[in-house]
Image (cartoon, rainbow, N blue to C red):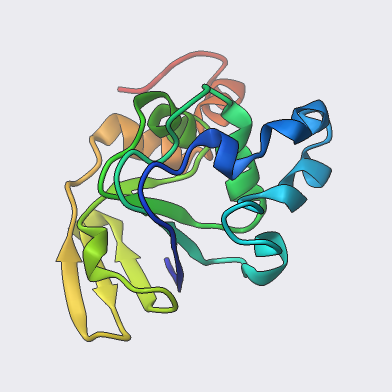
Amino acid sequence: MRGKVWKFGDAISTDHIIPGRYFYLRSNLPELSKHILEYERPGFSEMVSPGDFIVAGHNLGLGSSREHAAIVIKMNGIQAVLAKSFARIFYRNCFNNGLPAIICDTDQLNEGDQIEILFDEGKIVNDTQNRTLSFPAFPPVMKKILNEGGLVEHVKKYKDLKLV
């Protein structure tokens, strides 16, 4: 995976990702996805390109357990989210929907940096800064879920939870 960094701060909640006033659009995901992070960065859905990355500080995804937050991130072409830490439910929602969530030192990444993520090696290569960061490898079960496109797709394919 290779793309551009879009940097956000700490405590970006699911309400920041999808403003609550658009909750009525939860059955219209293409329309809902147009409002991603609009309070943090107006027009973000029009600025982001397929293959880009959202990078944040501590506790990304705190707040309500809206599964839609991870879904609309992915719908906007974001390949992965990187943060110093994640809210537990949001972290699982990312994987369940096929969106990699990487815990790493995001202080080493800047807005606009071009990075490449090497999952099997647990490395983030920052081409802009000519620097490499490490991150903990995903457990095999998480890799399998991601490779299937998320937990829902895995269950559709196998009609069961065949994770081992």
